[in-house]
Amino acid sequence: MTSGLWELVLNGIWVTVQLLVLSGLVATAVAFGVGVARTHRLWIVRFLAGVYTEVFRGTSALIMIFWVFFVLPVAFGWQLVPLWAGTLALGLTYGAYGAEIVRGALNSVDPAQREGGIALSFTPWQRMRLILLPQAVPEMIPSFTNLLVELLKGTALVSVMGMGDLAFSANLVRLALQESTEIYTYVLLIYFVIAFLLTRGMRGLERKLKAGVGKPVGRTADQELHRPETTGVGAGGSFS
Amino acid sequence: MTWDWGAVADFMPSFWDGLLLTLQILALGSLISFALGLVWALLMRTPTRWVRWPVGAVTEFIRNTPLLVQLFFFFYVLPEWGLTWPALTTGICAIGLHYSTYTMQVYRAGIEAVPAGQWEAATALNLPVTRTWRVVILPQAIRRVVPALGNYVIAMLKDTPILMTITVMEMLGEARLFAQQNFQFTEPLTVIGVAFILIAYPASLLVRALERRLVS
Image (spheres, rainbow over the protein chains, first blue to last red):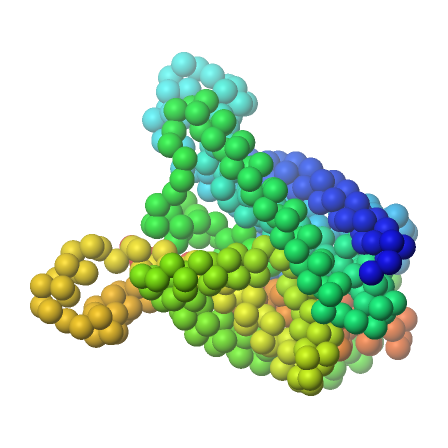
């Protein structure tokens, strides 16, 4: 491969990383917002949050991307810049999966902790902020790690819309070289390296957070079978 | 915002074609991933490190890289290696292979969840290894993993639109073709989105019910 083609690949990596970070932030915000709303005491709030989760988990990420790119401009008159359209579609979809993780982790906090907060006459917001979330967040980390890797893989979908991410530049390079094995092997390796770095970083974060609340790291076979579904496209939350 | 019911009616014939193909891909992809996942899981329990290490590395690699790129890899690289497969076959195999690395984890957890006493009893009864697996371990492990496998079938359903990119005319492929021919994007894309929810949501309720019955 010539240096010009490598430059194309480097640009692709940069777009992929930007997309990953931005949609990761949107997804985290949505996950906490919707996940906490699903434990709200008013049924209407729980119901609306549940509808959101089911709609965004029920459709495919790729269909959401098509919808944001083609239907949103026609229906509401918003034409988003490709990077933001991709961020929105991915962030909202993966945020719905994240909401299930947040809900599951909040439910897994010992009920006595919540009761303790009530006995001390904390407000609901104080209970959430000072008691429940600090204990639930470390439990979320392994599932969020999976979700982040799924999100990374999901970013490749925007290449279908012609956004110049890593998967898209791979296609351009393939057309230029007329030789597929080499470039696709490189690109798969690059994705794997990014995923590996993400996993390592998140494991460090988990260790730090769990040490903060005095818990061991790792999970049992039984937890593995019951963990919330976090594949990019999955459904059927079976946690709690 | 204008909604044209006429466009929905016009889209219906190609929608049914797409739905049918999506379900076929799902059925065959699930079969491949269930079978291959069990093979991976069993290979990962062999005593030789020289089997475990490559299997572990390859499946980890497949799980952590995008299905879309793997699909392109097979679609464009296989012909270079002298294998010309139809796009549909390539797509089904790629989905099956990708998800086998997930089902493998499910089987592994299921096998580990079989109580140690069952292994010890099999040893005490002097059962040979293959018979231990076939009669004692796998029946108990697979019972436990059915709901988790169901989750991955739903996940796979929602990955089938990716096959559109290699010219397979499943639901999204049909919707895109219709949209481009008629310049109506809202109706076909919304129809297939709703179709996905209508299939995925009841399916996930079913999986949850199965889980309650089988696991607890």
